[in-house]
Length: 550
Image (tube, rainbow, N blue to C red; front, side):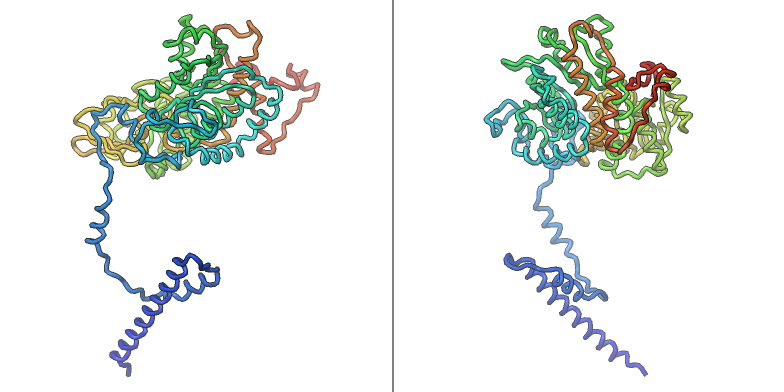
């Protein structure tokens, strides 16, 4: 017969032995870890772990009261802020960046109030911290690995210095990829001064690295509205330096120079603009007869529109949403406002992950494309009550109104993939009856009186560059296009370009594409003389007429 008492005593004895062995192992491992002079090889580590019993673990009582007291010793930042605060105030809140790993959220001092000097003794810059330059340099070096075509252009043209004498003032997103472009322009002979086109997209360490290398950069992540315009002004208005070329993204720099410094603006030799919003502004100036310099519309060049707008957004929309909200897309109902190239990229990515995607459109051609791609074209008011996510990418204003935001369901996500922050009527949400709660970097809960919460990303600004990063390779295509546009405008003989807006020549588009094909080990087929004659083409291109739609 079995002896229950004896078995219980034996089991208790065995458990006691195991606890003792576990404590001995813990002491041994702790000693090996703490000792500064000891090194633990893999054999010791393996034996240490194998000695720990893997069954009948001894449970310890968790001291909730003590833990809570310990936790309460550490003060936390206030999680809520009144909605009546201005955009400028909310923009200056210091939060860590999803795309900028060294951003210090503890340093509340404005860069404008700091005196910083780089290793060369220059203070002609204003960034978050020049001490981050070394880290930023490594970021730039990583970006260079996937921007081989731009580096190739740099090496080919470096000896000729096609931009010698060019004084370029730029207003773009300041990221590692943009830094590769800026340093390419410098290598080709240009002098550059740079600021940011978005108050949230600047990578502080990259701005520091550029400042350390001698480029006058005025930008940091989390600028206020006042800071934003101050930085632009510092780039333009400096003693002993007058710009003769503009590289713009959104048109803010061009607008500022046109309004505040008309005499300087008239002496500009060319403008290169890469955004829908900025190009729209240029065409308005041209139509009104107020554009007094030639401008290059890079946004509508094939190598920008079909790659940066489409393929870049197809990948970065998911990256931005995942990093900020951890949302699962399968089965979610999503509205994408606008079915241009950006909208097409967003819809393709969301559909691939199982989301139910609706599209809103004003253009019957784009709407028909959406239908043929398998999306239902609706009016926003028809689906507003039951959708989970709204993404705007139209370049318009008030695409999502306060009335529509009021009717969204609890937990909905609202974000913008267009350049400007006008698409979502964020200003209408800054009223006393609503409460804003900062959850994490660039993520706010807007809370209605009945407790409903809507998740607003980047305060309605550009999602992918505010909340995440974008694919380096695609930006290489855009940056190469921008560099060639600057070279073309700067070196064009007098009279080639009048005071108007131009598209990049087709031949240049094809050249940019050809530079990037080597990355894929792609080999182009060459036309025979007979084939070229039959098609009426030059064997070396361009291969499509200007009216061709890719």
